[in-house]
Length: 175
Image 1: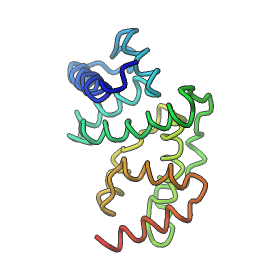
Image 2: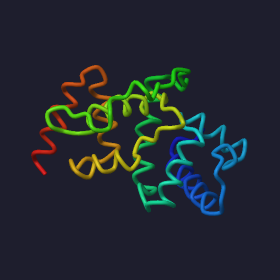
Image 3: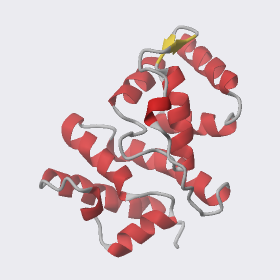
């Protein structure tokens, strides 16, 4: 694995996924070659992640390759340095997430995005969920938070939701 080349390799696969999606490819497994699937897996990613970015790029013009790369760099770092390059078999049960309207300290979506970010960090998101979806992007924009910054915050305070909430409250108040 070439670590230094990760950003350019990721960008090439991101762009390929966007192009394939625009041409009508709607099966994440069909986006890439076996070698590309292996490269994704070696970096803690899968085709679904890039499919989600491509789908939202096609339909909404975002989150774009820069945010996608930043998010996946955090995920990759966690995968390689915390998980030792081994993915987990646990998948988040979407029904356990708080409602989209749930709030803490007056901030809607925050109770939902914390466990979602933890699942993204650990590679436990089901195919039905995307970290950085439209609802997440609305939350990030409203509170002036970079998606990758929030993922790093969740990593730093993985076992302390109160610290995450307090940080978001301070950031939101400062905007």
